[in-house]
Image (tube, rainbow, N blue to C red; front, side, top):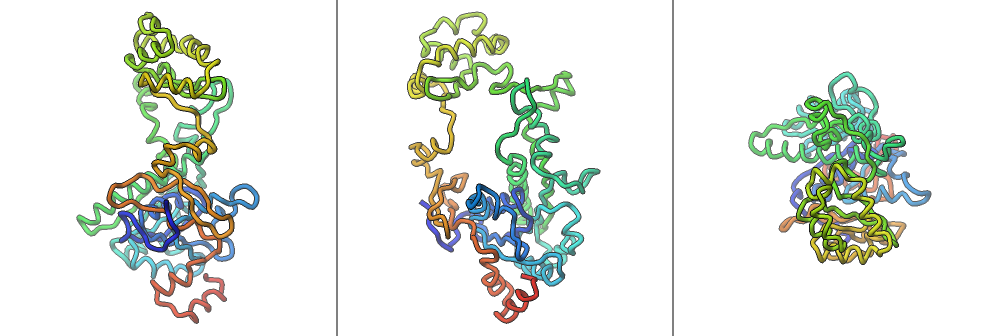
Length: 401
């Protein structure tokens, strides 16, 4: 179980990240670094803070507790020269600068990569945006929903007889942040060999595009365009959600040998030899009727009974989980996938733990996102910039921090 501590653990304890920007895409990248032990200094505007501080059900901005965990949060007015100078001084001893403003914003503030490279030639700048730093759309404001649509995933989500759905999470933002982190760590490896910093340009739409499998190739080679198919993938059968008597379950038995085991577990061994279902191609061609057979078999059985039958026959199966299922599940508990973290006003907060797991240098959640705006301003400015209490108070009274 994680504990609230100031001691950083993980593979990146010698790394410092200056995180600017707000909402999800940039901060999730910062969260990944902080989870792995990096010293992430999050910079927020004085008097306002990141809007994530207020997102959530009324009185419960719990998302902030997750996305700002393990970070030292300071304030600085980046629209003023004195605030910009604070960033420039912090960059001297930093490895990464992370931002997700609209392209051109950092340049207007005198904080471009070229500006910062003069201060620290080894700095790596991570830039997350809707459309990237170049191209005709680069200056447009970009949110995850638009990037998901442009990248192709939104069109494919949902049932074919209605408008496209969304995932229910900010998928484009977190994909962009994850790819930004991968690029940043690759740049760190390059820097170790050459001493050179560089810019990581991660766009939301391209991050979505990257996970779209053979979508483009199918269109350009075959003239085929994928369409929405609801809860299953066309021609991949059986692999769907089925209703039991007390909930929903996913059964995935689209390989020939697994389908044979599934047929036997259902008490219908003849299905595997039926020409309509005997091969992957045949099952795909007769997907709808096969799903109807399985649905009819499952409807009177409990999820527990279905799982037991399938697991005994080595058929992939699983309940469709909600949060209440996760917090009770013994596998989540055994792997410490969830962790209780103290908070300032809500008591212990349960949230997802650091991932992935590492055998020698595991990171940990040390504290939840701090509630007080600028919680670590004095600490960071004293420790890293050697400012006196009088100097910090002067900056505070002038609205710079």
